[in-house]
Image (cartoon, rainbow, N blue to C red):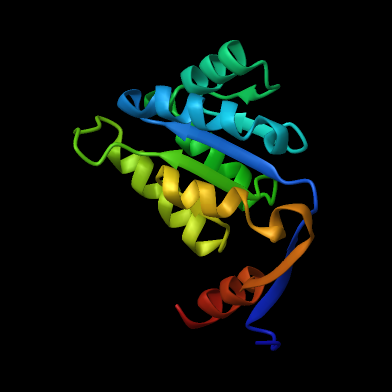
Length: 157
C-alpha cells in the first residue's frame, strides 16, 4: 500500500488511550480499567470528563479529563486524534439508551475510522485489544494522504 495516496502513521510503544463510557456503562469501564490496571498504567490515559474523574477516583490511574461528552468532550478527543495525539479509543457505549449527543458520538466514530486507529466499543473487544502483543510495540499503519487529498480537491472543485 505504499504510494502517495497514503502515508505511514506509527503508533508508539507507549500509547495514548482515550477512555469513554456512556452513563450506563461507566461502572463496567471502571471495573475493566481496574482489571487491566497493570497494563493501562504503562500508557497515557485521557477521557471525557465524568468518566475520567470516576476512573481516576476509583482506580488511582492518572488520566487527563476533557469536557463531559455532551459538553464537547467527544469532539475534543476527536480533535486530538486528528492531531495524532490519541492512538486508541476504548468507548463502552450503550446501544440500548438514546444519547442526546449522538451526533457527537457518530462524529468521533467517523474520525476513528478515517484515521484507522484501534477502537473497542464493548468489553470483549477491549479485552482483545489490551491483550494484543501490539500493545507493547510500535505499530505502523497507513492513512489517507490528507495533504494530497486537499490539494486535489481544491484543484478539481
